[in-house]
View 1 (spheres, rainbow, N blue to C red):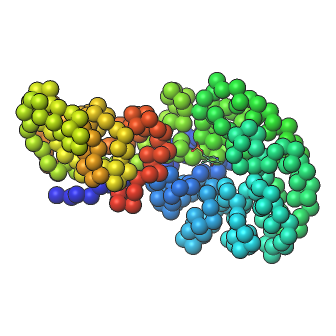
View 2 (spheres, helix red, strand yellow; view 1 turned 135 degrees about the vertical axis):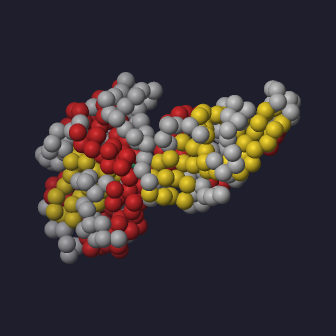
View 3 (cartoon, protein in one colour; view 1 turned 30 degrees about the vertical axis):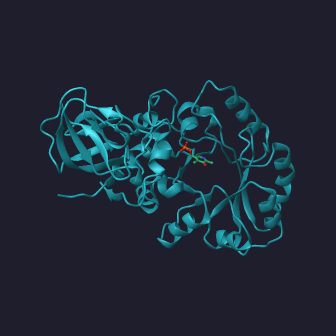
Amino acid sequence: MSRKITATIHLAALQHNLAQIKGHLQSATKIVAVIKADGYGHGLLRVARALYKADMFAVGCLDEAAELRSNAIDKPTLLLEGFEGESELRAISDLKLDTVIHSEEQWGLLQSIVLQKKISIWLKVDTGMSRLGFSPTRAEQILPVLESHPSIDRVVLISHFANANDPTHSLNGEQQQRFEQCCHTIPERSLANSAATILNNSAHYQFVRPGIALYGSSPLLNQGEAGYDLRPAMTLQAPLIAVKKIAQGESVGYGSNWQAPEGAVVGVVAIGYGHGYPRKLTTGTPVLIRGERVTLVGRVSMDLITIDLTSTPAAQVGDMVTLWGEGLPVDEIAAAADTISYELLCQLTSRVVREDG
Ligand SMILES: *Cc1c(COP(=O)(O)O)cnc(C)c1O
């Protein structure tokens, strides 16, 4: 019996999702595949290799980009958070990376240095999210200096939506308007994450930056995929390691917060919050066994959960139980845990074996 807790990564689904996105774009629009946070928990190198047809990659920090380069992945790659300190800036040039600049600290450093190889700068403007980026006014001031800087090859304008997953939110239009009015002489621009890519063609510009949609989760609030056929790129499974009958009124698990309303069969599955399966999930959360939906009962433990197998007499120790993925959307589990799919995918621990499939 295998006791491996496995996240099967469906490489074909990653490729399918990329093709779906590409099929909805104007042919000149380029795709920056966002693979930060270890490819949203799917494995950085695996995802990068599967998505070799993307035009560019985007990662959070230099370490992730350096890992790509040291594994012979030389596709244009953007550092979304830019650099810290002179050595990182020099590494960006050496590793032929593109970088965001978003702060006065980065701008000061960039001005003080001449790099051997020119780099492309993505000038981040804060259009209303109030996270990273220069104000539009400040970006306008910086732009001419950037453009004449000897170390800089070209400048791309970049910004980020705060509410792209909610198309009714009024800030979307305001952000887009500020983006269009800012530095309008820059011909290359990028604004859209997955949700904006899917919902708002007018926000595509020259580069779209999908992340979550590549992994097959819906980026949209309370909606389907708006014509996009996305497939889950990860199926999380763990083995059933015990089955037992309990009598009416007996309780299950820590806190004894679930009692069998009548005689029940309880299965124990070898996964818990110590693998990244949220403890917040409670009785009623679906799991799949032998193709059927059954539910979690009682508390999630560190390494175990308990499920109600009363209606699934064929279930046997050794069966693999699906926690999310094919047949059970991660979005549904995320909603049950009062969070978003991004968090569930990223917070799986290294104890979960990622396997190509
Ligand atoms: C993570 C990220 C994205 C991708 O967002 P999704 O919602 O996953 O599509 C795009 N742009 C920036 C700046 C990001 O940090």
